[in-house]
Amino acid sequence: MNELLRFEGVDAYYGAAHILHDLTLSIHAGERVALIGRNGVGKTTVVNSLLGLASVPKGAISLGGRTMRRFRPYLAAQHGIMVVPQGRCIIANLSVEENLRLGGAVKRPGPWNLSSVYRLFPILAERAHTPGTALSGGQQQMLAIGRALMANPSLILLDEPTEGLAPVIVDQLADIFNQLADQGTALLLIEQNLSLVGRVAHRYYALSKGSMIAEGRVAAGNPGALQEFVVV
Image 1 (spheres, helix red, strand yellow):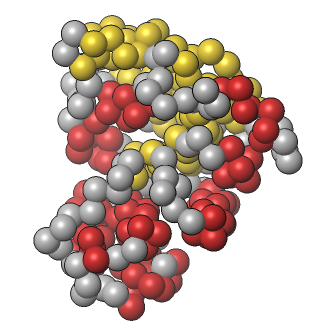
Image 2 (image 1 turned 45 degrees about the horizontal axis):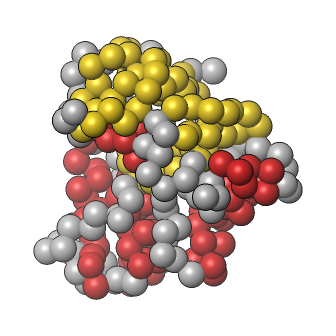
């Protein structure tokens, strides 16, 4: 199975603040993996390290088996890894369709384009010329996912995708994530909602104070077994 992303002994910093400590994890093609942990333990710093937004003076990050010597936001996309960021980061002065087209700028070949994204999210087709930030929270999350899909990624990192969303929208997203995984897209789900983790992920990593403290299989039908890692 092809390894899409690997962190090996990574330390990460913001300035003098040491956030990640000797972190090792890997995601292979087609996998569904969750990264769990309490607020403030460094989960988003995993994403920021990949994007070059945190400094990584120690350890190695590999994309598709290739160890990267420098980190820039566009490099992950070029290697088939897209991020759906916490807070969604919809561009305010662009329409829904213009936001989607940003995701396609990397021009990777594959099945995802405007038509296929609109089939997955019909509400985005209905509101294609609406400003992206005029959408509801759930619709903005769909837009952020659609934007990532436009790059035809092998792996999507989803950073707290259910934050602030109603349970009915979370249910819809769970179905969408499973559909994408069934079609072969690998997922790294950074999430505290254990119900969603239990419905989507097959294995997990647990992070505490910037260090990996546990990993294993997600017990089918019993995500509550992971409760100790996310509850203060």
